[in-house]
Image 1 (cartoon, rainbow, N blue to C red):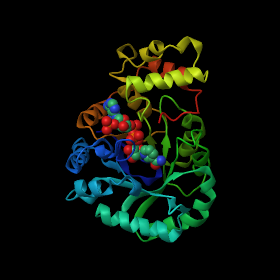
Image 2: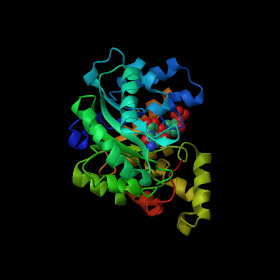
Image 3: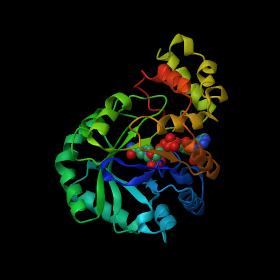
Image 4: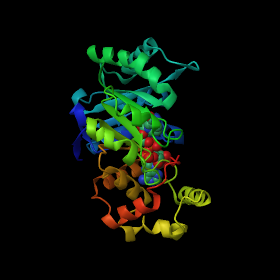
Length: 313
Ligand SMILES: NC(=O)c1ccc[n+]([C@@H]2O[C@H](COP(=O)([O-])OP(=O)(O)OC[C@H]3O[C@@H](n4cnc5c(N)ncnc54)[C@H](OP(=O)(O)O)[C@@H]3O)[C@@H](O)[C@H]2O)c1
């Protein structure tokens, strides 16, 4: 595994992070047993992955807690999250603190390394700053969290309106942003600020739904074609797919997807979410391969770099 400084946190994080949410939730969404999901976390640790991302709302904190039992606490970086909505209302500072206490108990630990506000929308941002940031600061002082983070709702905020504000504020040590071949707009709206302010950057949605299979990708290309978002020269699926194939230097579409993200300037940890041990093995190999050939990266930027309206979900 390779490790990277996670911005001003000074944590040394593996370049591959294990995502315990998304459409897979460690396989809990696709019929895997708890034992199989625990084994996925352990397989990732065996590869040297030390960055584990979960959330109260994923239902995978108990699995992560079980998988990490007996592992020295300083051998991994634990990232978890609290959603802003509870009982159909925005949470109070007291609810945030109660949520963290539940997460600590479920994860069987005294502290989490990064505690995020989960999936914050632009219209929730001011409330989060005035009501919840002071609570996060007090949790830091108590040693229950080491760093504060914020993640976006990429599907509903594909142009990063929330994160383009948050990354200019001093409150967030780490952010999680949607970035992939199909929507590269974080390069313009987010990474200049994270670099200037030395904020740790976690990538989600590298593969998600659109890059998971040829069928899904074909659907997405057809949609982009309908929206007139693809250059006529690259409108055919074959033309687009050519860049993902061996001619473009990638082992598969997913291989291209993860490597494209990993080597983007400003990216620290690329998350991979899976419940499938073969996918985990392949993704681990992908994330340790060198960058895609420069011509392939350039072609992917030329084809999709102007698109900021889809997330790939
Ligand atoms: N707003 C937020 O805070 C937010 C939102 C979304 C995600 N996240 C975090 O970010 C993490 C990463 O996002 P994501 O889970 O959507 O990740 P992803 O790694 O981009 O995509 C995962 C999806 O692709 C499939 N997949 C993975 N590897 C594959 C391969 N080699 N071949 C074919 N299919 C493959 C997985 O299914 P299989 O199980 O079949 O492999 C899963 O459905 C999440 O797990 C979560 O921790 C946060």
